[in-house]
Length: 298
Ligand SMILES: C[S@@+](CC[C@H](N)C(=O)[O-])C[C@H]1O[C@@H](n2cnc3c(N)ncnc32)[C@H](O)[C@@H]1O
Image (tube, rainbow, N blue to C red; front, top):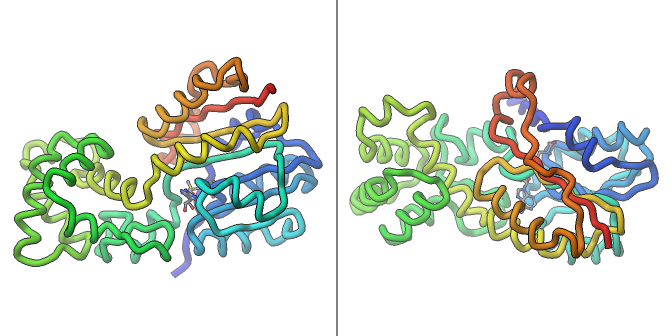
């Protein structure tokens, strides 16, 4: 099956805030299918260099294919951006001119019929970005306590029915382990009252799936760790640009920026930047995107 590529979010805004220059070195921490990296290279007439990172081998394979014409300008590394420091050290890079994070999952991951990120298809309850990782969504759903599941659904999914969903999962898994997305969706359906399901603007399983995905991939922890070291890797005048898709991620970014404001960085986005109405209309997946950017000043 042919995969449709990820449409990069807020490209115009990323180029504006990252302000890439010919001769500069940029880190794309979440290269996906390479849309943002391509934009950076086009903007600099192919004269910038990019270190592209992704946890997902499939993404790297696609990025390599998509950016073949720029192969001399790009180094691709399979890794977790929480290890940014070590990854750069491994490439003998001390400082860079810009760092980009486009958080969350790609369309290729969401649209995959095998990887379990979506409730739209029946597939194993997996949700790992990095297939070498052991922990899957199935482990969480079948092994965590009811209390812990409730906490994950409530905190990471902001699901009001977290307690009932956790209770129903534990009841269901006593009969047999929940192994597929369909089995999980059915359990959520039973837990959330019909009236509530009907009134929701989003699919009733969305929040639970989101919570499990964030937990499986430790998305919030990785972001915190990475932001803690990324400013040390920037040249003076270098910029960091972060697109997040979830209020919990955005809060981490906002707090990290605030902590460093004045002492070390200048915040370039006084208010969070949102995608234009036209972009949301042509690519609804960006509707929750929030961009923040900062410049290293010391
Ligand atoms: C929204 S997509 C990025 C799309 C990309 N900007 C493009 O234009 O195609 C997010 C990507 O980040 C990767 N990712 C998420 N968390 C990561 C982490 N901690 N380390 C490395 N890659 C990560 C995912 O595997 C996914 O491919």
